[in-house]
Image 1: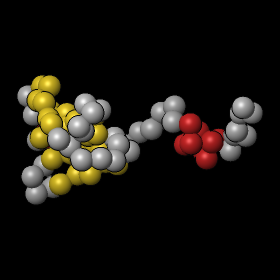
Image 2: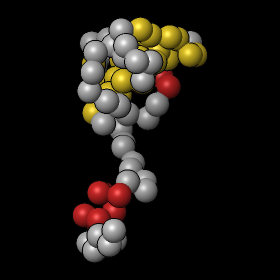
Image 3: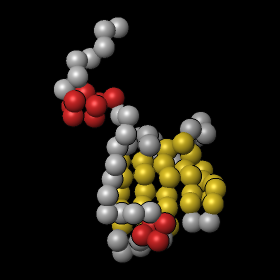
Image 4: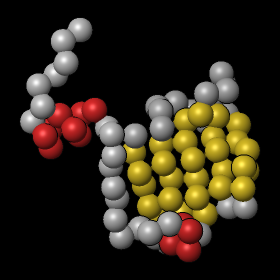
Length: 78
């Protein structure tokens, strides 16, 4: 997952998967979801992002790899 902020347009793009967007749908005012050719979500675009989200912080929660690194937990056996 990649977060990209474009200050010149005040747009936040959250890339959820690699792939090319072939379709998009505005799901709320200023929030556009991008889809690939198989209708999988590849990204979310948030226009006027600084007015909608707090761009000064990013918090991760319940992300397996982050928990492993931060807590130095041993991986669970398969």
